[in-house]
Length: 251
Image (cartoon, rainbow, N blue to C red; front, side):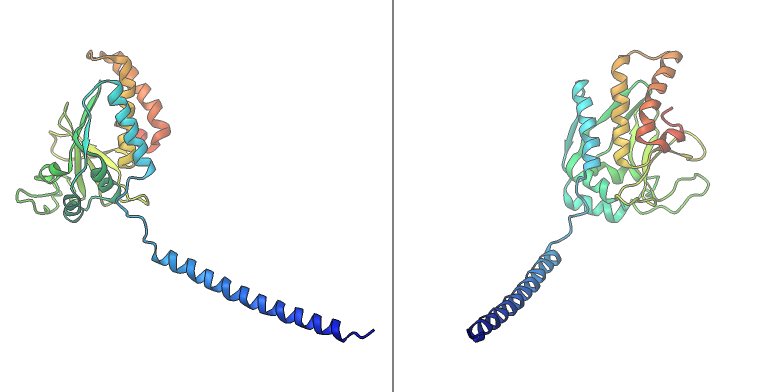
């Protein structure tokens, strides 16, 4: 029996295998090039988007306002206005996302020890006059004697005491956020105290103050009740933002 037919068949099979392998490699290379091209062509997500941490904080804040039946009105700031604030005040990406998606129209948190009004985009420039900006709306020169820094951008104010709440835009974090501070008004110098390690955490802490306040009603607290409120608040702030708790503003 001759082996030639079998050898010829085997030879053709090997050639066909090499052809298929070569085609497979070319297809794989083309497929890889296609995915690479698509990856390069896909733009990165915009930085001014509402991330999950900020969305969670906003949800908690809205929920407690609804539970306590207090007015809570948000809107959307005009992108052109937010872009101008980015240039003039250097507001960070997460705060810009907040203004674009949840711009405060009427938001004032209420608890026995503090009330905080959050400013909308249209109010921000005016609120900086005499602080980060001069009377003409231009960046103010540093004033070592009063301690206010040009990087401190006011985003809210205590309606009980008049103290400002502000971002320090010179301290951005990896999430595109900045810490929030306050300082006591009516003194010779502005001495900043940390309120939250980020703006997202600040909103969450404000929601927490209002949640704890549910059990206290609207009556003025005596010393014992205020101490109990602050202890309850400290226990809730500790796992949320240990650095803010250590700073002492909420305790």
